[in-house]
View 1 (cartoon, helix red, strand yellow):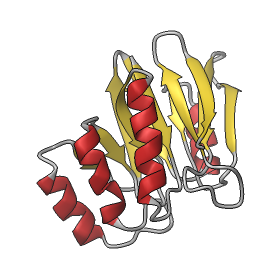
View 2: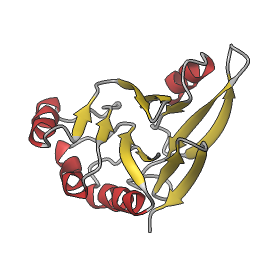
View 3: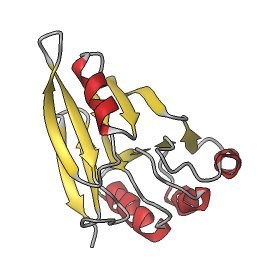
Length: 169
């Protein structure tokens, strides 16, 4: 299973939609948004793309009531998880948060296969050693909104643990 991982869209709906559409074309079956969405309407174009979307809020929450209303109007396609996401996709344990320091701490536990974060606007893929002697993938897709750096998103293959940082044109 492939997924699209995005973060820090900061109200740039066309850029977010372009990344998710490109991910769908590349075989992605779900989206994880690591926060700083800001306006709920930024997600509205994703409903027509049709992939399930999992969202955390980040440090720029925006209007939580509007976000809940949009989730309801999406018939379950968009799910707002609050401050973090703990879910299993295709047998892989994923955790998502907005903050890199929080993400790194959770990656170190060894409880997850992949930990996703955002906030820094800098894309990275790191094999994080764990306290159990293993490793967890710690990934940050950068800013799909292109703030302070080129607009980037991440395509992740949950079977092979392949990660591609992609630039948005």
